[in-house]
Length: 126
Ligand code: FEO
Image (cartoon, rainbow, N blue to C red; front, side, top):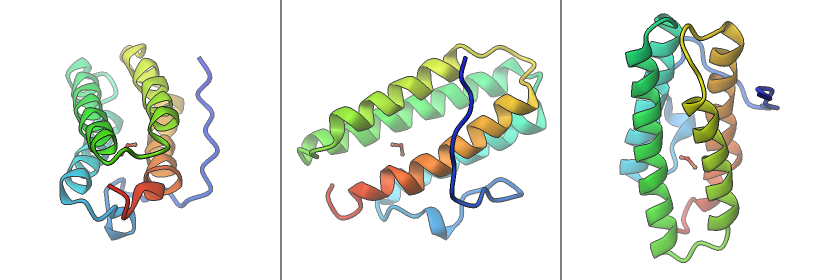
């Protein structure tokens, strides 16, 4: 499984959401905060299958909401954005515990890069 992600953005440490990640839709900002928390929890307890399941659950819920908003707004980049979501979900659903440092680092970078590099493109358009 390819886990490399090119992330030109700073990865916060400790790993938590901050205002620089705001997409200006409160529900999506809350969901992003929850994904940050879930990854933080996985980093803290890499052997916990429950924490990994928690990450998968909040991620899938968020992607469903976000894609629903994009659908309603007839957002032009929905298909490409959905593909990126699906690839990440496939990766995290394929993980098993204990999570390696490489996996945790990948997830941390992926989320930062996705919000700032991809989600930010829908600001003001949903
Ligand atoms: Fe907020 Fe595209 O995930």
